Length: 438
Image (cartoon, rainbow, N blue to C red; front, side, top):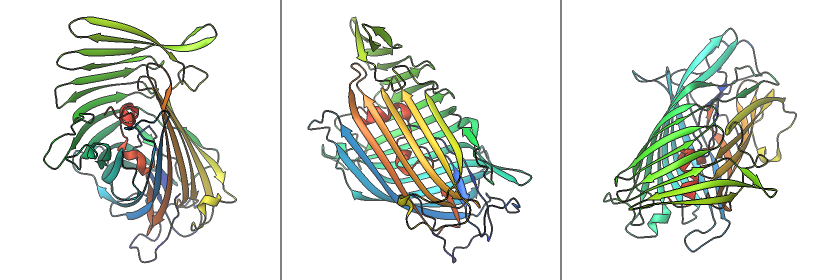
């Protein structure tokens, strides 16, 4: 939940406006909703730019993540993480060679309220979002063209093995093949948009202790990844691990796909087909081929767990946004928010199906924004379910709830998605990490 709290001593422009843009995945990148506060309601006379060098703001809040295993074990226990965060943002001139005019820099710090004792717990994060501002008459629109995220977290599962603490560090550089635009301001009731998903990424990941050693279980060995995704949610990626192993994964637009893992002594390829019907029941054909000194092929019929009546979603990833219109009242969860004139509700729904990683997520966000662009309150919930690829049985249910409180902001830039998801940037490996496979 996001409450705008205005501070008269914050050194900001007396009048600024607003623009927003967003993208959602299983892992959360904040893709820009840039909003600011000013006196009065939504005006069509937008004389001041909504994005310019020198703007500053900060906001904070609370995030809860609950992980529920269908069949808990001694090493996979259901758990809940609760933490607070503070984000400090500044709009900077992008460096030479950057893909946009502006670099919106965000620095996150975290404080754990409820420590799960397992999984990853965020320590710090920096986000550089590259944006341009387009002005056409009275309309202003922010376009996001790329992003760099450096996330640092505590690997508590590996810490339990000894010789820790182990610190995970991931650096993800994304270029949006189709630039991602937000709603133009002033907002118009009934306006809708679908956020394009196409992007290319480069990712580096390490998980080491103070001496530079990886955990003894080897589940989170360091790697580098290159990844490409299309607007329909199809993707491909290739990873190279520091121990010499390699892996790749491909998901086609129709939901079929494959993954291959290669070590020095063997190679395993798993292929996922389209659902088939037999005796009135849908199943997902899966073939696993293991090559060592010989090759062994094993066929599986996994229970059909796809949420869209047993067939893969089309598109596989979809984010839809709507300006619902003026809000006559705010939800009870927004109690204490600083009210401003002409509050509009902007709703976002995101679904993401990864057939090869056997995971599905659904996210809903309600953002209440004043006519002048000030974000009054934001409520966001994400639910991710992970399944056994070979059987189709559900294995993990992951529920995230984001409660934001903005502080000292005369320019408040919302994170999109919630800060929790920023350290689950790779949609393809999110379910794998929850399963503990690294």
